[in-house]
Figure 1 (cartoon, rainbow, N blue to C red):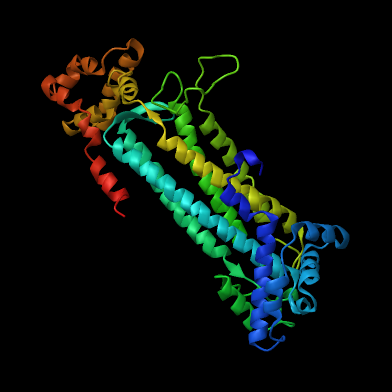
Figure 2 (cartoon, rainbow, N blue to C red):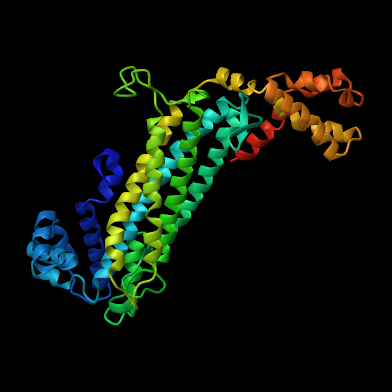
Length: 431
């Protein structure tokens, strides 16, 4: 992931130094277990810890010669630690180190993403509560439907990201496994107790059965979850983009005093942050198909998944971290215009009360078909002539013969549409 979309805390997880540090932790944990069970001499871990330092540049030089990253790493450590380092990696295979490390990196990344979601949830909740009773028009198919409140609109995103948080927690748990089972996963050259020790030391679960690699359906779930979260980000971003259109202008991204909107048109204030989030969501979702295809490897292992994961691991987590943080900033600093919401609400001269009239007509004896036809006829007049819907209804003798005008007027009441708002908020914010 390029610097422009990288935040330091997440980026560090995927840097070579952190990766090799985890490799060393895995090797030392395994060696500790081997010392404990008297498989290797005592003192190996102490010696390697004191002298076996990570040298990223040296590992790279060795790898260029031997064409094997784990061998290059072990050679580099041995150069510093001396002959005791020969006991490292005893009975293990490269995938024991690589897969356990990758899962730890995903777990570390996941924890940051959980924090990001928690911050976003706070911001959405605050804005939803503030605008809990702020009227705006609800839209279906992009067309005015019936009144809602802006707070209710925001509350849908709050619930969605609560679900995303739960999905991510489950996916982190799914990939938090450790495999130290040796070639083709049979433990022929390593004691299963070593695996249990390492897993406990690294706060992972033992992989029940590995085929030399940890099964990739676990990772497919993780990356699919990231994609779902990205899609939720995009849904929010697209809503902001729609609501910022000049002819709508119910919300607007914060625009700094020195900010420029266009190189050609000085009047422009564009929703660039939300557009950027839409693009990042596409990038994050692109990791799903490769992660699913990584499940079907040859026999007990091949390395066709390796290049994929070296890319999608850092790229997807770094991009999602950035996107969640950016969305949080957008929500916290969003310019919200209740007056424009009310202006847009009144654009169609009250025709959104059509269902209320429809239901009342059915209650006084009209069939649903008759009621629909009467209401639609008057609503279409309002559409075509820009005339008040109430006046059209009040002048329709077929309707007023059944419902007096003064009673009809009472049906044109915004509070009818918002009377259950408190119930919905209570249901969604009960925790």
